[in-house]
Amino acid sequence: MEILTKIADVQKLSDKIKNSGKLIGLVPTMGFLHQGHLSLVEEIRQHCDVVFMSIFVNPLQFAPTEDFDRYPRDFEMDKKLAESVKVDYLFYPSVDELYPNKQKTIVSVKDLQNYLDGLSRPGHFDGVTTVVAKLFNIVKPNMAIFGQKDLQQSVLVRKMVEDLNFDLQIFVAPIVREVDGLAMSSRNVYLSESERNEAIHLLGTLEFGKNMFLTGERNVDFILDGMTAYFKERTHAIIDYLSINRLDSMEPLTNFYNIDSFAILGAAKFGKTRLIDNVIVRKG
Ligand code: AMP
Image (tube, rainbow, N blue to C red; front, side):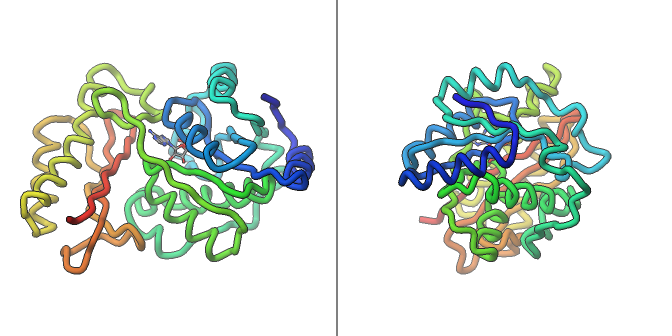
C-alpha cells in the first residue's frame, strides 16, 4: 500500500491508472478505522481494480462547538487496518493541502438537508459535499462507496453526483454492527461503560418502531410516541430526533400512503457523544 499526501501526485497517478484501462474505486473516510470502513473496501473491491481510501478529518463539516479537535485519530493503526484489506493507495492529506486558502466555493445540496442531521448540524452537509466533490476531482474515481450508517449523507452525495454530472457510480453499503447491535462508529470510543450499555437501545428503539409498523400500526405519531417512551425508559440519553422519513427526499412521513419503503432514524446524545443510527423498512 502506498501513502500519498499531495493532491497533484494523486491526480497524476489516477490518470495513469485509468489510462491503463483500470477502474478506480474510492472509499472516503475520516479514519480511526473500524470494521464498518473495512466492509466498504471489501464491497467496492468487487467492482473495481484499484482501491483508494482517503483519510481526512474535514474541518469544514464540524461546527465550532463540535468535536473536530478531539475526533479520534490513530494513523498508525489505520495504516495497518487499511493494509489488512489490501487498500492500494491511501490518500492522507493535511488540512493545508486540501484547504491552502479559505475555501470560498461551497457545494450545497438544497432541500435534502432540511431535515434530521441537516437541521441539527447546520452547515455540516455543505462541508461534507464540498470535501467529497474535492475528493472526486482529486482521485477521479470511477466509483465511490458510502455507508448506510450515514443515510442522509449518502442521499445527498447521490444527488450531488446527479446534479453536477460527476462521471462515477455511487454504492451504499449496509451498516456494520457490534455483536450486540450497536452501529460501529469511530465515536463509540468516547462512550463510558454505562453510556456504552445504554447506547444499544438506540437500535432497539428503531426496531421497536419497525415492529409497531410490521404488526399493523399505521399512525406515524403513535409509532414515534411509542419509540420515545421506549428509549426514555431505558436510557438517560438526550434524544435529538426519532423520525420516520422518505428514502428519496429525506422528508419526514406524516402517513404511510403510497410508500413502499422508508427509513426510521434516530440521533441521541449519550453524555457528550452524539450517535446516529437507522433502519430501512420495506413493505411487503
Ligand atoms: P466516517 O469515517 O465516519 O466519515 O465514515 C466513512 C464512511 O464509512 C462513511 O461512508 C460512513 O457511512 C461509513 N461507515 C461508518 N460507520 C459505518 C458502519 N458501522 N457500517 C458501514 N459503514 C460505515
